[in-house]
Length: 77
Image (cartoon, rainbow, N blue to C red; front, side):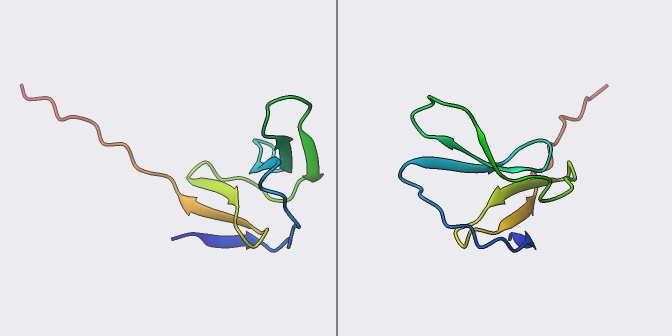
């Protein structure tokens, strides 16, 4: 289950843009066609922790959920 990290209430246009949180913690958007530059909407919105996956939820807020844990195969000697 996701938890809200920061309330932004962004007005979004999901038909034209892809909204995401980049590696520096900025909330950004990019045209879905792939053309054009990335536009930073909220600079330094959050401080990231690599144990979580950050995203912009349907209310326009930044949320996070725990990353999946990789399991390693046990070696039989």
